Length: 449
Image 1 (cartoon, rainbow, N blue to C red):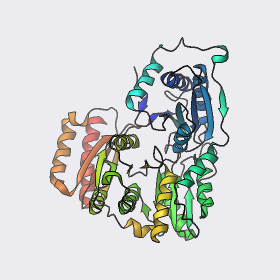
Image 2 (image 1 turned 90 degrees about the vertical axis):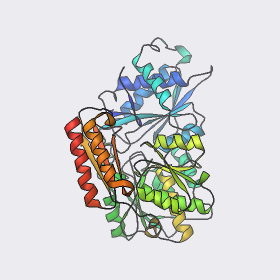
Image 3 (image 1 turned 135 degrees about the vertical axis):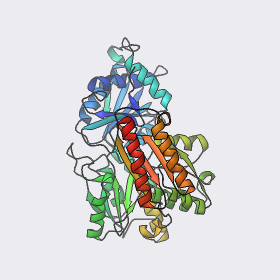
Image 4 (image 1 turned 180 degrees about the horizontal axis):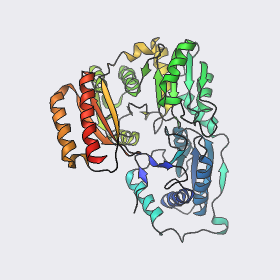
């Protein structure tokens, strides 16, 4: 049996396995079977980003779901967190997002939410995977009135906009705040501008004209240099860049300097500690977060808990232990008090609220954290093996970590979505760690390239 699911659903080049019409139809049938319980009409929400292939995958999923006697609620282009919200709000049995997040337009992906708006755990994904590859449900074919229907939910975006605005303090507005907003020509191209404008902000919008092929292309959170330039040209107070499905956000401050997810978490940790609102005084981060974040959080009297890379693992740790703030350096920030997954617009609203409440610029707020020099190299590989089982790589990593001691760290891992090994080093001396990172990368190339 093959492996369909990666760290964030099923993903690949559209119209090539596994992102084909045939597999999408089977995934629709599989998710329907897993979530179809007592004898009643069941319903699954299906939403997407702005990729050309979204139409194809959407129709295939809808066909598969309806063929199992389950109804489909179509919401069209909507951010991933918006689909999670609609799934929970409408008491649907599950939600499906058609998106490849920050990947280029020729890729696409499918990820699932359970009825409570949380991403599916590994064991449920494995169950769906087995159904796709087996013939267990091939003969289950409702007929006549038992076949599912598809409905379009025309006001889904409006519902989500109202929800997003409710997460911003009622006593504040964004009057007088000039924002450069880059929606990556993605799923938030209508929703995000409406939210910030209705709260009173003056907007300069970028990436709000999707054509099916320009999602993430030279825009959005993968290209913060675009909003950096626009902030300086327009003398804006802040730049906000979303990715294609708007579950992550990256900022630039009023000087055009990048403010990443680690700084966002540091700022929000400070605000929530001040309000005694940070559950168990704990922030959940991944192993990719900078050591400077750990230092900043300790100074605030809080602590960090680490997980594997992937916002789903951050959320799982948060739910297991009752934590309410977590995220990734890449800009996935999870406020469980508001939503069940990373939400770029909610994250932006929380930062804007702190700026307004404290009457400080973003550069002043970002000064709460000093970033340790970090070097990240991506090495193309031909095969996947346990890093610890490859003596040449393992010994190189051990030797370098011994040299760094507690002044730095080494992290080597496989990408969850691409044939890459990611080599990351942190330390006090950038030139030193850059050389060390190259040494590790060379050993990876020799062993796996």
